[in-house]
Image (cartoon, rainbow, N blue to C red; front, side):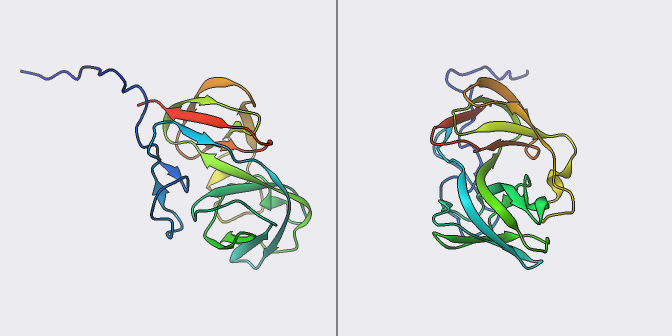
Length: 196
């Protein structure tokens, strides 16, 4: 005798979607993955200009009037940095939040970061397929050169290519590492739901 798994109404989308630093408990660990209570993740984050970054070869310290990061494990990227351009486009995972205006993340880069630095929140999409509805605040990107693995910095920043533009609905594949949702726009809401 064999058992067949029959579909059940209401189980198309994955429950308790794992998103680094999104919501929940366990926020003191730098790599904690916590689960939202719903199966649709809503993201209202947006870009912030005017960040200052100092590098010591071990950590990067970011100072911004109010960076809006609330949980260790949240991810960010930067654009507009000069001097040390490898800080741009990489996905950085926040290791410590000192105050509402200062946080740090592991980074082996050294030098002086200059320019008009823009902080852009990032959410790495989980493995599988997701239905994504981007608002004016975000785009979906993929990395085809595999440099997303350089988590602590390198001489070359990864190349991210737009997979889904702002204000679009689509199905997005992800390997759990090289596809990200980047909040590169202004106030709006983006949603994604991984398919179970």
